[in-house]
Structures are given as C-alpha cells and as structure tokens.
Length: 581
Image (cartoon, rainbow, N blue to C red; front, side, top):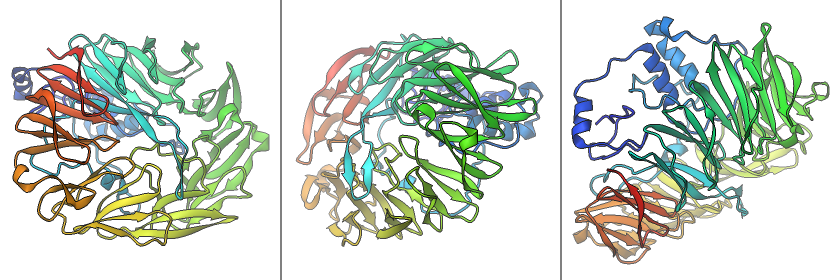
C-alpha cells in the first residue's frame, strides 16, 4: 500500500511508515490509497530529490554551470532531467513527504561488474513470509576501532541511530539511549557520509543537528533546504538553501551558525575536511567558476575553474581538478600545486583523513596517490571496487593494503614500493551471497548450494561449512563467529549442519526478523517472540501479538500494542514511554 504521509510504497501490514515515521490507521491508509494524487512537475522534482540515498561520494563537479530551472516553466518532457540534477545535489530532504512520482531511470553503467553491494546485504528471510514492516529508519554511527587485518584497518560501526514518528513528535535513539523528542508532524532524517551525526528537518522548516548521543540542537529555520554536507566527525554542517532567487551557503560548526559564507544564483558545491575546520566551496561568479576555501572565519580564493575533490584538516592536503587534470595542492596554495594526472576520469575513494585518493583515468586504469608516494601508482589496469565488512565505514586508513573486487574475483591488494601486487582470495563466479568479517580477516559465502569460509590472507584454501543448502542466503554476526543457515534437512543450524537451532517440524510458522551484530537471532513463531544465540530457541517473556520488529546493531525495537519496547541484547526487553496512538 501507499503511505498516507509520504506516499511511498510500504508493506500492507504496516501500521506506520518506515520512511517518514507517520502512524496511521488501516482506514486512513485505505482512504489515501483509493484515489491517486495528481502530480505536477514540481512534485516530480521534489520527490526524486527527497528519496533517501546512500551518502554520495564527492566526485568531480561539472565544468558547465547548470541553470537552476524555474519549476513552473519546466516542460513535462524535461522533468526527469531536472529531477536528476536535483537528486545529485547532496541529500535534498526537505520535501520527503511529497507524493511519489515516476522513477527517473538510473544512469547507464559504463562497465558491467559483479554487484557486491547487493549480495553483502544477505538479510533475506529464510523461512516463510518476510514478516512485518521495518519499525524504524536506520542511521549508523561509528566508533573507530583498531581492526587490523591482512585486508587493512576498518572503522567499525558499533552503534546505530533509530527514528520514530508519533503524534507527539519525532523520537531519536542513539543505540539504546533515548534523546530528546523533536516536535513535528512530519520529518526527514539523514546521516553524514562517515555516519557520525544526523539531522532532522521538520515540516515547520526547523533544522536540528544531532552529534553522537548529544541533545538535538536547533540550527535555524530553512524553508527551501537544498543540500547539507557533513564533516566526518559530525561537528560541522555546510547548509545550502534557496532564498529570494539565490542559493545561500551557511556554515554551522560546534553548535554555532556563522553568517552566510556565500551566495550564488547557480548551484553551490562543497567539500569539508574530516573535522570540518576547512571548507572548500565553488560558486559561479562573473561567468566563471571560482573555488574558495573557508577556515577560521576567513575566506581565501584558490582559483578559477577548479573542482574540489577532497581536503584534509587545516587544508594541508587538497586534491582539485581543472579541465580533466588532477592536481595536488599543499596548504591550499595554487602557486604550489603539483600536477598528478592529465587523464583524470573520476574519483573512487578518499582515505579517512582526506590525504589520499584513489581514482580512475581515461584509459580505465585505477590509480592511488598519497603525499608519501613519489607519483600516482597504478593499482589495476581495470576498474576495481573496494570490499568492506557489512558493519564498517567505507573508507580506509591508507591504500597500502585493502580488499577489492577486480576482474571477477575478490582480491587482496598490497603496495610494494612503486607498484601494487594483488592476490586472489576467491572467484566471484557462482557466488550467491557473502559477508566479510568485521576485522577483514575472513569471508563466509554461499557458492551454488555450499557454504564456505576462507581467509583473506590469500592463497588459503576455503573450508567447507555445509553442503546441499536449502537456501542460498545466511545470517551471521559481525565477526562471523555465529553463522545461521538451513541444512539439507531444512533445519535451521548455527555454524554446523549438526548444530540444529530449529528442526524441520517447527519451521512452518516461523519468521526470522534479523540477527544482531553479536549474533542473537530474533524469531517469531505462533505470534510469540523467541531468540537464539546459537543454541535452542528461548521465548522472550510477555512478547505476544507483536506488530513489528527491527534490529539495529545489538539493539532491538518492538512495536507491541502500539507501545515501543527496547532491548540492548535481544534477550530481555523494557517498555519505553513512546506510544503510537
């Protein structure tokens, strides 16, 4: 059915929307779904702009200045193009509750490749129906852990954000800690690229900033919010909004909002350093693009015609492009720029401190550069795709060692002086699903009907866990110490075909909701809730006729009788003061 609040397609059994948080009755939903809305071009543009997407990777900015369309004058035939432009501006969320319009076709993929981003999300229900609708919107927040492995160091997610919309307002959780309520009938929530903070934008045009588990802070009222850029540490927002015919750039850092930094009739593009102390922004002025730096309350012009790719704290290291050439800037000084590559074709990765980049050139090669390198080093003669654990931030400390997909195989890449060596871990042919451990040391995967685990050190023989699997999917803890799957007898097992959690006779009326990072599986059977941590099922007391369940890291939320219950371990629950009536 269609949500009465935001117009998105949601499961028929849902009592509230997992996108906008709206709570409604079955009668309200039926009434809203009876007559489809009449859409305008403005609806199409705003709806596409408001669709939640993965945090965008900052890539080269367009060389031609896009002309901001006057929505009332845009022909229907040009609506898709306008919507695509608006969507590519980072996270324009303020119209999230506009009714949905036709999907804009995705841009064609230049090279066909194995889609690891799809199979790493292997949380497919093994048994029966898919269960009830998701209870919350998930936004993850990380803690940097020293997860050293043969594949490099990963920044592991330890805690997640959860958002709930009720008649009273918006409730935000950080892990199992409940934050102050934000009063709003409708709201949109988003998270920064490095997943360390969130913002909430309400239907009263109020913008709130949330850093970690701190109290939500009101930034300002923004009626026409265009895009928001976040620093990796969550302290800083760069806010672009439309006001009186121009786009305006505001800078919000450590709880303080500066006066507007810049204004421009065209789009304003922004790159922030990891801590947000340095901001690069590009505006269109006097017929030319102009790249500037803002730091410590001061603005410095870098030069004309440049695009910003990344900048480190203090502006010590920055990467920019101009007319297809990649440059390395020291201390944001144009006079001291170093030419790296005249065939720059697109940015692939940036290190977590902003000092290193990986990119592709016009010849299809993938290259990496850090200030310690003499020159860009060729990683591969073809396109590669970095492979990360499911609960890790998709940035690395350095490019000296990492795991990636290349030429139909998962490989371990290591820099040896002025070149890279790669070693195949496993072939991607026939893989149905897989998951890499949180420390990057091993991979568990299903190939055809067999379940394997293999070390990422390379050259290691895979170990067979089980064969003749009934399903091609599995559930696992973040460290892969607990792996749930169905054996050839259709029993649900943990780690071994002989270690049966649920036997075939009990499987008919079971719905599996999810597994926590620690490996606790939440199961529903005969309208009652159970958990397993690798052994036999144990009933969760006083949990009956549950409407919905959501697992967020190690925290589990349950909607029962329109009341919200919470558990920090998936085993014991307590009732919160949140009600959905």
